[in-house]
Image 1: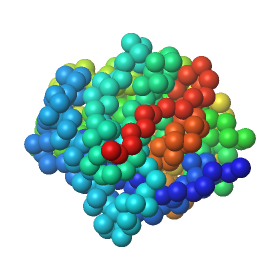
Image 2: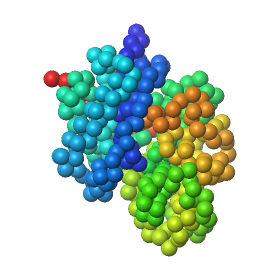
Image 3: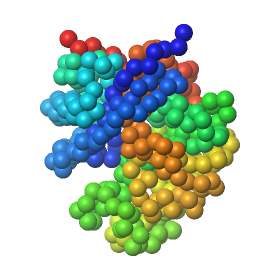
Image 4: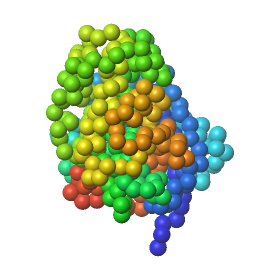
Length: 360
């Protein structure tokens, strides 16, 4: 018997560390996905700096985790108020938290965010800790959104790829008969954002303006692409800090040339990743903040062998996708359905994940 559709909220604090994305969807955790509302709550610079310190250290103090959780609770309240939906109509919240450490080879991944506290603050059931079971079973623990990408592209001609460019970039290849392959391609916006912050004081290269004013240094780009990660077969995943030495290689360049080279690095890594696909795709659908960078989108269009479009082209909000995915996965978790697969995270068999917290 099919599962009943319910209202679910999803929360995402991504590697770009720009704020909390919160989405409301109606879903059965399988074939039905209907967006209902979405908003972003930006982080203030001071909180973002504290979060960045936790990511650099690989752990967070209890006070920061509580602060993060309370901010998420407020984001949920704001979304429901804006959508004019009562909390009593929400079946579950999918709470990703924020990743401060990810080393699947060590079977360790850490997402801060107190699921039990969020359940108490909102009065709603919460599913969090989506990645730990996958990593404990020998998987990469990422990416997890592919099962959602498959649902929202069900009506499209296959094969198709969904490319999410957040702090780290990852792709989902969806083939005929619901076949999946997914992995992190390499850097997304993180290196570009860090470079822009250091050289302009602004934590993003808005509209790719800095990169557009520079020239790609092919020698530096080749050195960046020599990282052993690119030779690994998927599934595979990355910590945000994996390419932390990139700044040293790019450090001799001007602000403009460095931004151009790092933007080219993200695009080149995606093109390299495309060589791992079982069959080349009919098109690339881009989500996440990277789709707003016209220099990056043009670089992808040049390097990839199929059309590259923002996911808005098929009617979805590219800012909302990850938050929607965790709402969808929370429903799947609650229903005992798998959220990760051998082809997406490298786990031995399809498995569910997440921990359920009920409000007191």
